[in-house]
Length: 399
Image (cartoon, rainbow, N blue to C red; front, side, top):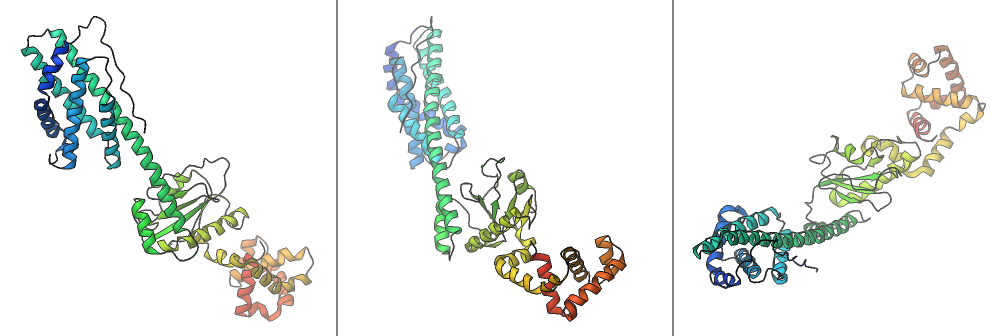
C-alpha cells in the first residue's frame, strides 16, 4: 500500500519563522487542546457525535492528536515530513470507505478541527506577546497541516473505494454466473453470494440478451440493481423485479441500451434465471434471421408461439413438408400465391371479401384460387386439426 508522503512547503519569502521553542510550549498543551478540538468536531459534525468510549470515538481522538502533533512538528521543523501521521490519516480515509461512508464528514471535521486548533494555539501565542506576523504564520501552518492530512485521507479513501468496487463487481459476477448456470440452483447459495455482493434477492427476474453491434460500446447500461456481464457472448443483463420496480414498461431500459437491439427473456423465479437467458438467446437468434424483428427490443412474452415452434426446427420443417405437400402439384409460379391466399383465408375465418381486401385482389380472384386449393387439399381444408397444421406450417414453416 503506497501512502502519499506529505510535501514540505517552505515558508513564503519574508515570512518570519515561528520560534521553535513555541513548539515545546504548545506540545505541553496538546492534550488539553485535543479535548477542546474533539468536542468542537463532535458538536459541529453530526456524523462524529458518537460515544467517545467506543472504537469510533477512539479513532476520532487518535486522529485529532495526530493532526495536532503534525502541526506542532511543523513549528519545530517547517521542512519536516509527517510520514507516520499521513499514514494514520490514510487509514482513516480507508476506514470511512470500507464502512460505506462518504468522505465529506471527515473533511468537514478536518476543517472544523483545524480552525479551532489555530484559534486556541493562536491565543497562546498572543498571550506570550508574540508578533502578529508570527500568529499569521501559525495560521498558515495550521491550514498546511489540514491540507496534508486531508490529502492523505482522500488517497486512502480512493484506494479503498477502488478496491471495494472491484471486489464488489467480482462478487456480483460470481453471483450472476451461479444464477445463469444450467441445472438446479440452491436458494441458500444464492442468498450467501448475494449477501457478499450487496444485492437484494428479488422473487422474479428477467434476462436481457444484447445483439452484437459494432457501433455500440460494450459498457453496462445504467440500470440500478441489474447484474451485468458485457464480456459474455451475447452480453447479458439480469434485471430484478422486472414487473415491479425494474419493470420494462418505462423508458429506462430503452435509454440504457441506446438503440442496441436486444431480446428480453420471460419473467421467471430468481432460481430459474437460466431459462430466461435461454429464451432470450433463442429470440436473439431469430431476430438475426429476420423471423423476429431485427431492430429494437423484442420481448419473448410477446412471441411465445414463435419461440415454441422454433424450439424444434427440424420437427417444424417436417410438419411443413408433410402438411403442404399438396402444393407440390401446382406450378412453381402458382405456389407462393396459393400459399399466401390459403393462410389469409384460414386466419380470416373463410371470409372472401376480407381476404380480397387484405391481399389487394378482386374477390373473384380469391374464389378462383380457393377452387384450386379445394382440388389440392380436399376435405382437409375443413378439418379443424388439419387447418391448425396448415396455419402453423404456412405461418412458421416457410422461414
